[in-house]
Length: 106
Image (cartoon, rainbow, N blue to C red; front, top):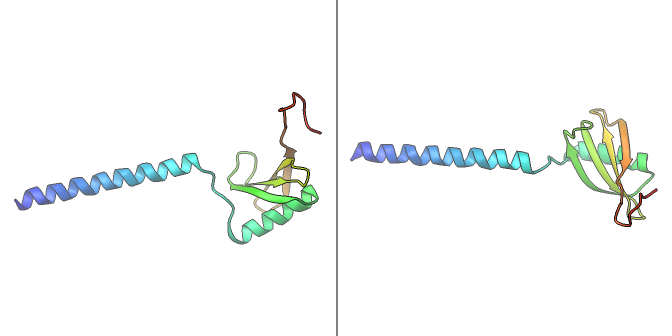
């Protein structure tokens, strides 16, 4: 009987570990890691200086184009992605295209 309880407990522990592993792996693949803390303040400041103002609407650490990515929504509704290096220096920026009317936004 003691052997059966031990085996059952071990199987439950393994199942829980596997489920936790899938949850962690899924969260890494499905969600971007936002910028937090003092890095968020510094990245936001750099991005807003690059765009000349607006509102920070999304951030990401480890972006494929640079170390940080900050999305800024301008007062006219356009969005600009600002890419920063680890020192919060602008690497590049690009306005998102709006093809809903069949043309590009300027």
